[in-house]
Image 1 (tube, rainbow, N blue to C red):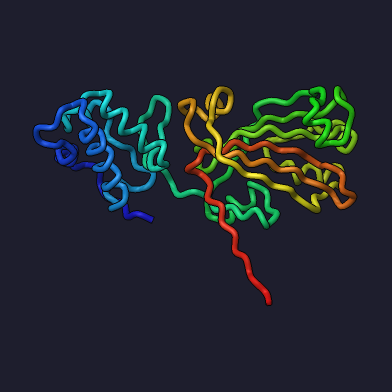
Image 2: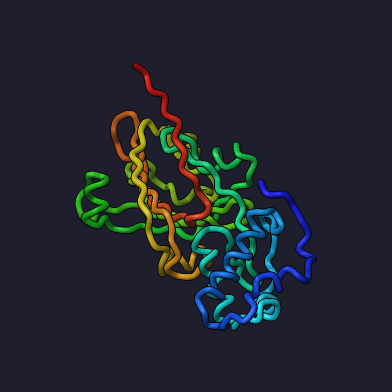
Length: 260
């Protein structure tokens, strides 16, 4: 955790400028990027701190606005900063740690790390099974499935958007329940359904179109796609979940013990 230091240092933007550098020169763009990154790593810009405005950065460095913005977008792609709409740029908080070998819901493992989780239901509907969904649920193409779309937050920051499908034969009237919290808990308490096994696949992706819009980020930024199929003790598919994470919000960590 970086230490908290004041942003009230009107001279530090001047440190970014390279004497005699051409505004469009690549070294100038990297100089702006490197100077901000150094302030973050040293703790001069603490986690959660707001960066000076783009105009202030431009004035302090003598760089063109496009050069400053390119440096900020680079830092965003590296996960060091993120942007809030109509608010500015902020230093990224530490990612939450996720162990895919343990079965813990989002609300549980985020809370256990001293962070504040929140789930926002974006919409629900009945859909017909595509060939892909039909294969997952072992139903006929065109069969009815429930679909939930949710956005999840850590410390009031949107970090992932997910689309979940559930077989209505296992959980009839599911869409009538409160789904802004733990779906696992609803399935357990209302339908006596418990997850006995998870299959999880993870792969890097680009956050585009609907996912980028839901997370309020620039389309094309890197992300992490987590695909989860949950089964009950009878081997039935309980839910099929596609999670699109901000790349800077999640750290995958597995502790494996080797026995001989």
